Structures are given as structure tokens and as C-alpha cells.
Image (tube, rainbow, N blue to C red; front, side):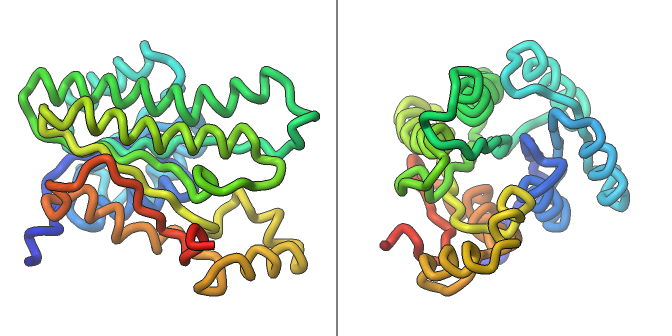
Length: 254
């Protein structure tokens, strides 16, 4: 059973992988014997990630990429193939959040969230998926949605809409690419302790009200998602596609 969940020797791309939950994903792959290509739009984050993961330098590469740029994605994927010779897993993690009431938002706010969270997921999937298809190679695409993809959240109209889009994108792409042996699934994190919600947790009244929404009683931590990530990355999930697995302490049951 041990080999069933192994990612040893596999090559994973993690977008937005230089900080936050994405960094935890990248580090976990490396700790379990995979090779990882991290891309991020922030060079400072990439430099910090490289320093923190220095012990894995032979299994790690990084690149500055704007996930809304087809040209930059194409170049990065090409560099990954030159460096590692293969790609087995794509984790579409890059994402942004704007908290505003709907009447306060403008088109620029909307486009910023949708372009990164949805368009970026499409563009990276297309680029890596084309290589899987051309090489007649099985592959795993793991999209990062959210419990807000199926639940409303205050001041997060664009974010909730984008994460709902990722859910439907996952289902449709799984249907389209199943014939090529490409598994497309998504993870829907719940309330996870990250910098993205640090301001909310700093307000004890707000923090408590959010914890009260969670059947398991508190926010999770990034490491809580790792088991699901590795499962969807390994041959243990070879007959699973088009699924959204919520790692949320039970919040979507409400």
C-alpha cells in the first residue's frame, strides 16, 4: 500500500507556490521525494522560498511567471521540461482575493480576480495538458477551489464566483480529457490559517464567529490539505476525476 500513495520521482508544477498554502504544497512534494517547479509573480517570494528549501536544491526550480500571460507560461513549462525532462502533476494554486462590497467594486477589481483565479487556471492547464496529450502521457491536474465556490461569503463576490468557476472548469475539463488518461480534480479548502485571513483572525469576535461555522471547531492549517493533495497526485486516485474534495472541517455541510 505504501507505493500506492507515492509521488517519489514525479515532477510537479505548483503555481503561486512561493508563499502561503502553495509553499506548503511545494515543500510537501519535496519531502515526499518529488521534484518541484515553483512559479510565482513575486520574485522576492521566490528568493525566500529557494532559501527555505535550499536542502532540496537539486529537486527544485523556480521561475517568475504571471499566470495570465500565455507567453510566460509557455516559456516556464518549456524550462521545466528542459530541467526535469517530464511533468506529472500540475497544481493550479495561484489566486487572489479582494474584499469589497459589490457596489464598491469596479471592472478592474473583477478582472483582476477572475483573470488570475480562472484564466490563469485555464492557461496553465492548457499548456501542460497539451504536453500530456502529445506525449501520450497520463497526468494529474489539481485545481484549488474553495468552500466559497459553493457558499456565499460577504465582500467576496468576485472571489466566490471565481472559485465556483474553477469547480465547473474542473468537471468539464475532466470530461474532455478523460479519454487521454488525464485526471482533473479540485481541492476546496475551508478556513485555513494564512496571511490572506490574518486580519480577520486578529479580531477575536470575527474569528470566533467564523470558527462557530466550522463543525470541527476551528480553522485548519495548510498542512491539513497535504494528505488530499498527495492522494490526488498519486496512483491511488487514478480512477477519480472531475471531483471536488472539500478540506474544510465540515463547513460545506451547513
